[in-house]
Length: 239
Image 1 (cartoon, rainbow, N blue to C red):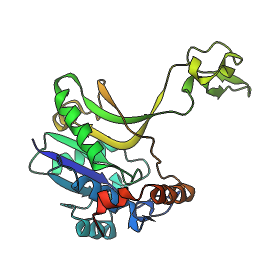
Image 2: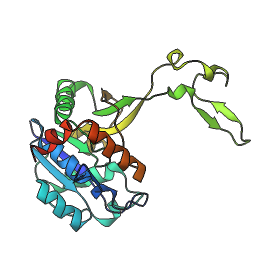
Image 3: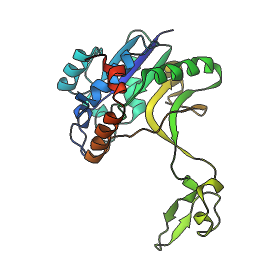
Image 4: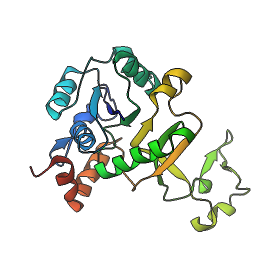
């Protein structure tokens, strides 16, 4: 089976400028994502989709393949994952049997967990349209509120009253958030149906992970690495 990893890294982030090449544990987020993919047993090739020459050079040094620079219109704030991945699949000559989407903004990945996700995808391939990683939310989404046009809190889902939202979290169904650890996609499905994940998305639960949206997230990830130094060795070897 041909399994390609696609690391997607545009250069135009506004919240944290150039966040994809910020450093944690002495390595850029881009390096973390490429190296963890290369360390798997399942991935046969790792590609980088970027609009930046600088990012492309970093990617090449880490072992990624960069067959082209991404068009500027696919690197804007409004560009979506479906268009970026369709562009990649249409531009390469050989289509993989599975594509794992790897986002640099969720950098701390165990290659063994990536392999487990890929194995699960192929075991269930006839029954699913994609696999997506999730982790359990610390509070059930059913305990959340919306604010209506009058400024009052309104409950979400099947919760009838604001008082019921005060019940302990064990009284509510568990809810999960997609976390960017790994998505395993079916290239044939994407190109034929023009959908990325489809309607039969297999849940793949991972440890709770941090996604980078702020400088504080980078600082927290740096602290996390000090608590699990074995991850540096797992991803980058003995260096």
